[in-house]
Length: 286
Length: 153
Image (cartoon, rainbow over all chains, first blue to last red):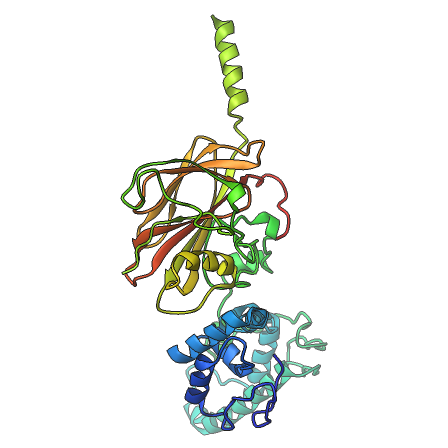
């Protein structure tokens, strides 16, 4: 199927409605068309069919069209590969996360921006007066920390008097090993855990596995599969061939058939005419 | 006496070699008078069934299952709505290239037949699902080659 612009006429589809938004009308035309009529379905309908977004009438129209045009099954399978149900297959890349040492550096910068800490148990006047200033400094420092995490190398300024200066950070993903942070006064800083980002810890099992190693087709034996079309299993050889090939009359020999109300005495007639594939037919339609 | 017993054991082993299992594939198909969708894998089967009953216009694969069954052993294949197909392997592939099976589909008695390897033998059963679909089972057998590297296909 080739893509067309929504309003361009298609000489291969003479009975297509001029107003292409009339889906009910198009559905009706497809259902009334003969198998040899050059009727096509809009390309987006195939994608919608793969995603289960069509109503019953449109679905039946697409299925009827697919029966007459088996060559389109390949297109349908491509659409199924891009179905939202396969999103997890495409979204495998995990973004880089700063290491604990990098977050320690961020905390030290916030610390430095907040200024010197008053002695414990005193400084009520200092606290009241500097609360606004501290809050503003905290917001600025946090914004700076986010920018530092997102972008490339920055030079970390020396820490407060008495501590070793931090080393130059070469990249976000390769922070230098920083000296351990000085202990936080209990009335100014919360325990370090409360300042760490809310990243969900990776389960230990997944951390050990790393990149999931998939089995190959030779390492998987499929035993029972439901019918969900083709190409939905990324690994494993399907149980069904492209087309079920029936045995011919020369390739089947009926040896023994127990008596049954489903067939006359002597057994069922497995071949009813020349060119018939042998089968046992015991259905009775209402 | 021990010599006689050993001879009997050797003959028995030669008649039923333990590694000559058969891989049986059963395809569960539902045929309908209500819709016209035919699974591309069932085009040939649909044409043959419609020679006997033109009213069956829709054919879809409900499930497919494959099991390795030893010669002389049986296995049950779940079909649909708690129905089962029992399959017994009577003989492995013979000089005509046929494998002999006995099957017991829903609503029918035992059917024993020989069929060429890799070809399907369908049975249109009298069973109808709660949705009114006709249950068809297509059975195919081939020598079990799971211990070898399976060809791509």
